[in-house]
Image (cartoon, rainbow, N blue to C red; front, side, top):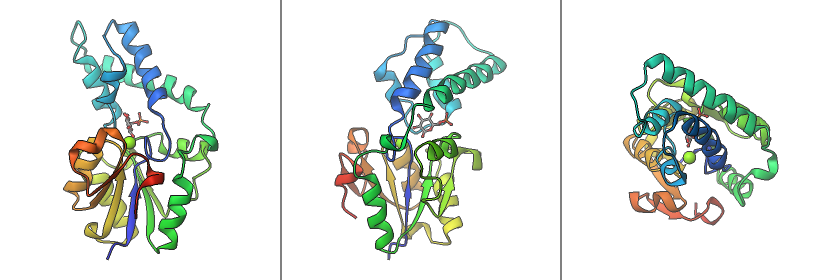
Length: 208
Ligand code: BG6
Ligand code: MG
């Protein structure tokens, strides 16, 4: 029997894509690296460090580890400033009702996000106290597509991985959930082709 549901944050609960994009674009333009919305899609669900690696694949020169660390930090500074614009109104349509519905069904709830800004984002949108546990990229060494974030969430909730649903909008997240042995609900156009157990365009439309 399913006992828990683990939600990804970015792209499932709230859309932060354009903020990530604006921040990475700033860095890319400054460094003379071609970057557009299509390349931005490749950064979905993966860690900040891995995102930078992907961005720099098209860079005209190689980068030292210290330079990369500095760029990642600068990107996060820009991103955090943009996140100040977030309010509870930015919670995606249908999400609150859906979380309520999951709770009514007796499911324990968690956030499982690669983002090290998770606590800040949940605070901005007023959902800090909503979930039984919150696991982020800061809690693990291996981020998605490794299963670690989701496995830690199940452990904290005291449930078996096989009794967990995962809601995800990114291929890296679906892969992570599958390697954790969990059932997947894919949300949005980017995961339609990676065979989640269920799929819908928005969380509001998904069946539980
Ligand atoms: C994921 C986003 O949730 O978090 C990725 O989908 C992002 O785009 C990753 O790179 C890490 O985020 P942060 O906030 O730690 O830079
Ligand atoms: Mg996501």
